[in-house]
Image (cartoon, rainbow, N blue to C red):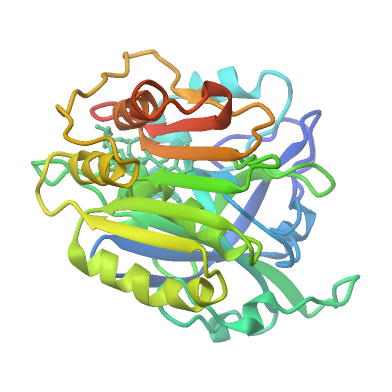
Amino acid sequence: MSRQTAGSRPRREVEKSINQYGIFPVTVTRVEDLGASFRRVSLSGRSLLHAAQPISDGFGPLQDAYIKLLVPPPGASEPTLIELDENWRSRWLAQPVEIRGHMRTYTVSRSRLIPASSLDETHLHGLFPATAADLTPLERPLPSWQQPEIDLDFVLHQDADGVMGPGSAWAAGVQVGERVSILAPLRGSSLWASWNPGSAERLLLLADETALPALLSILRDLPPQAEARLLVELPHAADCQAVQQQARHFLEALPAVELICLPREGQVRGQALLTELHRILDLGQHPYRYEQAGEEELVWQLASAPQDSYVFIAGESSLVKTLRRVCVNEAGIPKDNISFMGYWKQGRMES
Ligand SMILES: Cc1cc2nc3c(=O)[nH]c(=O)nc-3n(C[C@H](O)[C@H](O)[C@H](O)COP(=O)(O)OP(=O)(O)OC[C@H]3O[C@@H](n4cnc5c(N)ncnc54)[C@H](O)[C@@H]3O)c2cc1C
């Protein structure tokens, strides 16, 4: 049963719309635990052939491209379908969550083509695989026996009482073979992404665990001459070890790129990241003054045509605000050189 009726229009694999995005029903092809805190869920379906490249063909930079996952309500046996007319959002939000489920945002960590006839033979190679096979260019048009597959890497977070958000809970319980829908840009339109370094030659990337997939997808496509520092705070030392191990392949080809993984291990969120940021920017001791993102505040702004240096900050909104303040007020980095994205807000569900 569909979670939302498609009205009188015939249901199609891809619901094209007046918008430049579509609903893509896909099948879960693989579920894999990554380190201590992450779970990778691979999704595949011929419908993805209609998505923006490289989601549709696995060839080209993803950078920090993201999609919306239509998290089905518990017990749903079919993927959510929404007719994407001009009122779809308000119509969808007006329904009870028990019927419509939830919409959550996730980075496309990898994309590739797989044999359409043998979904269960998808070969992945552990955490953040670095295989040349994944990057091989493919002939176009695509043969009928191939179909796209994408990976989403979920942080399995829970509160002090063990309660997970719907997105995290879905990833924790999902089984291979289940069907789900994603909302993503259509083929021929641009990916949804924030990475915009312009002509900057010196790059600084700051992230929490939710932006690790974005960071790693950006890392994979940096040019060999890139000069970059990537700082990411992760829940546990085991996450850091796994990430460093898997990123080694890419870092070997990038002599002026440094990836610094900082385990939180029970410290206040952001403390390790702020301390390290002060160290690498030579800012001396700092008083740990945290900014607080307001309830309704949108913490999201992209740099405008940065030159020379570029800073990319993504993660929890109050932390992102604080990191930006340090960069601007303490390090004197021009505001226009900074893209900052509050991916989520502590204590607040994604709407
Ligand atoms: C562009 C973009 C890309 C993103 N990419 C990814 C990605 O690749 N992987 C990923 O895991 N997340 C990613 N996120 C973040 C993700 O969308 C949010 O964490 C989202 O809130 C998770 O939904 P949920 O249903 O699990 O929790 P919600 O229902 O939204 O929140 C429930 C509670 O959990 C808290 N919470 C939410 N996320 C976390 C967390 N990570 N750690 C601790 N507490 C949390 C909330 O503050 C709230 O109190 C991305 C967000 C954006 C905007």
